[in-house]
Amino acid sequence: MSANQLVVTADEGTQEVVCTRVLDAPRELVFKVYTDPEQMQNWWGPRDGKTVVEKMEVKPGGVWRVLNFDADGNEFAFKGVYHEVRSPERLVHTFEFEGMPGHVLLETVVFEDLGDGRTKLIDSSVFQSVEDRDGMVQSGMEVGARESFDRLEELLAKS
Amino acid sequence: MSEDQLSSTFAALADPIRRAILSRLATGEATVNELAEPFPVSVQAISKHLKVLERAGLITRGRDAQRRPCRIRVAPLETSALWLDGYRQLVENRLDRLEEHLQKIQREQEEGES
Image (cartoon, rainbow over all chains, first blue to last red; front, side, top):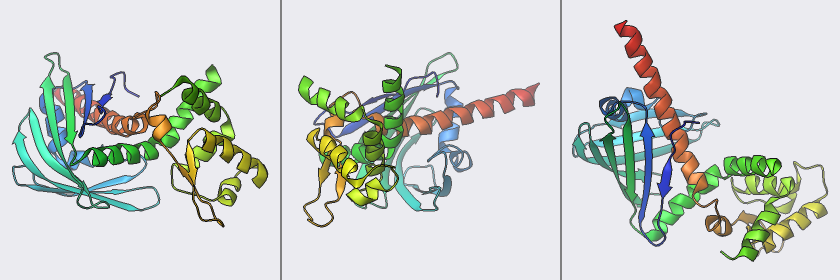
């Protein structure tokens, strides 16, 4: 795990989730890695799976589609459209999981130059409804629950 | 969330078999027999654990009299300190990988320059 803390906020009753994290790399490089299909296959998606970037047209109106394969070979497809591409500081695009069509969210990624070779990444996602947001957080929670319980187990074992 | 609810949530989570049951249910619903399979204890013992989890509000049981499939219920966890933790972990894993990748690229750049 990194020394840089991830902060996730999802205020009750709102349609938004905001994730903030500092990365030990200059802004230009972070933006490049974020918008380069070759690089993206190396970090997006689950660690024990495989990521294939099928399409990634990083320009306003451009389409992206990414496939994730889990360890059992199951395919999960995600897609969206870029709305704003302002290198190296801002990206706005839609995001949709093809397994749940019609639930589209609008993601804004801000790359903030901290001036010391580090970059603050602020990723805000606005969902179509509070229910959509909670459903997404909950499904993420269920996927991550196993690891969380493992960590809870460690915690309880120590106490 | 009330203190009582939090206590019952944590009391339910304090048992390793019950945590294993919840981990299994996090991947999808299951019947008592399916849940009992990996454990060296009786189906009756698993039933007792399920009652504790149900009382703590951590699972729900289906109405189907034959199967009564169990489902994880995240609401008590949502309002406890664990709220958002799984989601956070998903995002964190991705950003950890992004950072590792950034470090690799920067190392390669430095080596290229020297």
